[in-house]
Amino acid sequence: MLSIKELGNVIQLTINAHEGDVGTPEPICPNEKVHRVKKDCMEIEYVTAEIGDTFYLCYEGTSSLMDWIKDFTLAKDKFHCYDVHKGFLEQYDTVKSEVKPLIRRKNLAGKRIILCGHSLGAALATLTALDVLETNAIKCELGLIACPKIGTTLFANTINRHFPDLVRFVNKNDIIDVLPPNMFGFKHIGERIVFGSRWLGLNPLDHSPVRYQKSYNKYFK
Image: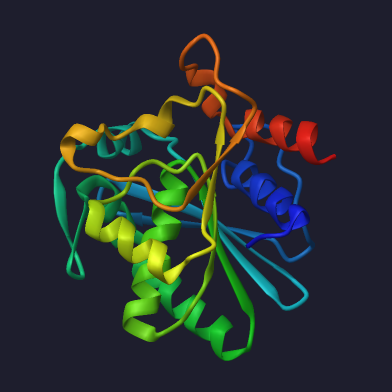
């Protein structure tokens, strides 16, 4: 499980991954770097950073029109032997040929690896973690902020078995916490930890990485 300091790093990285579109980028260390991968009509950004023996890889959340189109796809596709959200999987397919070799190199160097992200980024981090575990036997850690449902019950149970201490952090009124709908066969992963108590229904503004940073500062600083 992440320490409170590491959770703060993860939340700041989710802001940094947007390169100024959301909040104020503040590098968590001098070697922090933004990467951009383009394939066909899709573009995925992620941030890497190393602090001591810990390597962070943080995916950007939803930012482009194509991201939104993929996010609201309700179809499923096969990922290894699991049924997962087709839109998330297509976005992961865009970046996996770049991030998997990077993770393998950091693992060989003896680094502790934290895969993280906000919203879409949390889904991509989870798919990455399972992929490198099943294909390369590399065990990473996960830092999930505002993570949507990613796959069916079999997928969720597999993630929970491999990552028994997994938690996902959710703002009190974040609408993404209920998406995609259960009626389409999706199930959440990990233990849900909520910042605040829900009131007056769901609020799209509570989904912003900046709101998560404010929640973190309120409860942990």
